[in-house]
Image (tube, rainbow, N blue to C red; front, top):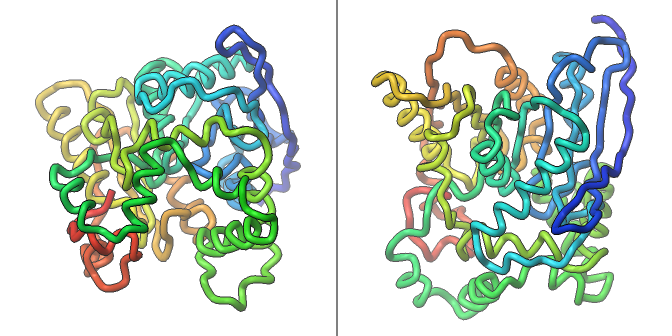
Length: 367
C-alpha cells in the first residue's frame, strides 16, 4: 500500500453564538500526500460525555483505506469548546437549535461547502437535527448507535413508581437537569478519577481488573476526567433537554429520519449495543416503502459491528472501520438494507444480564 503522511492538528474556530464570540474545538487529520482538500470532510460528533479525541483510535486505519479529511468536533459546551451558560433549559426545540446553529456557524466559518456527518449516540441526535435544518450541507448522514430513536413508552412512568428508591432519585435528578458531570465536579479527585476509570474500562470493553493498567484505557480515563470536571456546566445539561429520563427521545428520530432530505443515511450498531438495531431497521423499512411509492426518502443501510457494544469505535476498531468504509462507498442501487438480528438478540434487553438500572422495566426492546 502506498505510504502517506498524516497531518494531525487541533484547531479552535471562533464563531458567533448569541451575539458573542465562542470557540469550537476540533481534532483534525489530513493526508498531505493526496487531493483530500477537494473531498468533503467526514465530520465526527461525539456522544454524551465524550470528546473529539475519542475517535482517533480508528483514524489511522480509516486514512489508509479512504484518504479523506477527518474532523472531530467538540460540540459547543463540551470538553475544549467554549462553555457558555446553558440557556435552553429542558426545552428540546431550543436545545436542538443551540447545537445546530453553533455547528452551522462553525461550518460557515470554516467555508466547508458540503460534508459527510457522523454522530455517535446523542451526537447522532444532534447530527440528525442538523441534517433536518441544513440538508444541502450534508452529503451523507451516518448515525452510530443513535440515541433518541423512540419515545417514552406509555406505561414507563407507572413502572418507574415501582422501581427502587435509587432509580427514582436518579431519574428525578435527570429530569431537573442534573448530570453525571455535576457529581464528578463535586466529588473529591480520587473518587472522581475512579468513576472515570470505570467508565473508560466499560466503554473500551475491558471490564476485568487486569485491564486497569492498559495505557489506552488509562489515557481515556484521564481525558474524560478533565473533560467532565473542568469548565462550568454547559452543554452537558443537554441530556435533560434532548432525552426523557431513561434515555427516551423527546423528539424521536425514528419518525423524523424518513423525512430528512439527505440522499443517504447509514446507521451502525454494535451487537451488544443497548441501543436497539430494530429501530434502525424500521427506519430502513419505512424509507424503502416510501421510495417504492415514489415518495422522497433517504437510501438507508443498517450495519452491525460484531462483538461491540455502544462504543464500537473503541471496542472493535477493525470492525468499526470496516463498517464505516462500507458506509462511505458509493451506493448507486438505491436499495434500503436492514441488518440481520443475531441469535437471541432480544434476550439482551429482557434476559438476566441486563444492567440493574434497566432490569425493572421489562421491555423486550432497547432504546
